[in-house]
Length: 208
Image 1 (cartoon, rainbow, N blue to C red):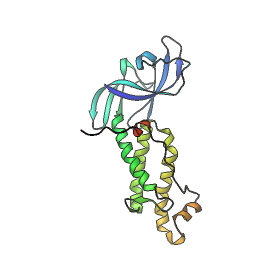
Image 2: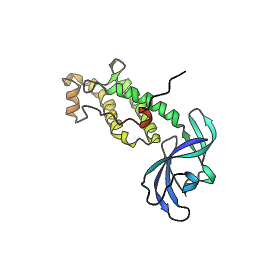
Image 3: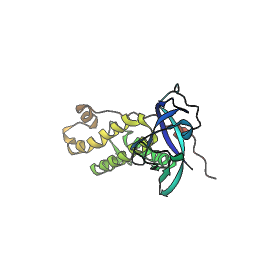
Image 4: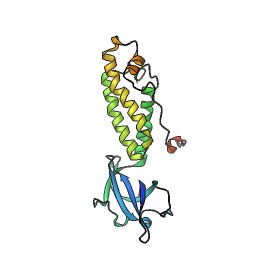
């Protein structure tokens, strides 16, 4: 059994026993919509008066596993509006671990702004900024799968710096410092960290 993260978007119909529209994201971050009877998807007491959107978990069967990607079969013959009865998803545990890792290096890369973008203990090079842009794309996809929509501003601000810092390095003789360059191009002098997910705030279990 696999726990599949989903979001009830809205109440669909009062037809017995009550139908809802649900959104599920696959391993590539694409949204899939499901319209199904409430009891098929959850035991939660959902009604037309419930507050939407409502995150919840669907119990799905694992059909096959390839690394962190899992092909899951939706419960009791449920299909998406495209007619798919199975989806390729990434396990929540794998996404959470990837989030922990990527959030760590991102926080480090931008923590000395507006002095500069870091790579390890040194300032980043143009090639390293390109690598971080690629890593940021992966982080954005993980955030999409985890439903962390409140991270978009953080991701956009990091992207601005990873994209612009190489240009600054190539023209630094024209600027007193990186802060001047940022102000000249009306970029963000600081990058505010996004709120941490609740599961990141929980203490991790200690190895025995």
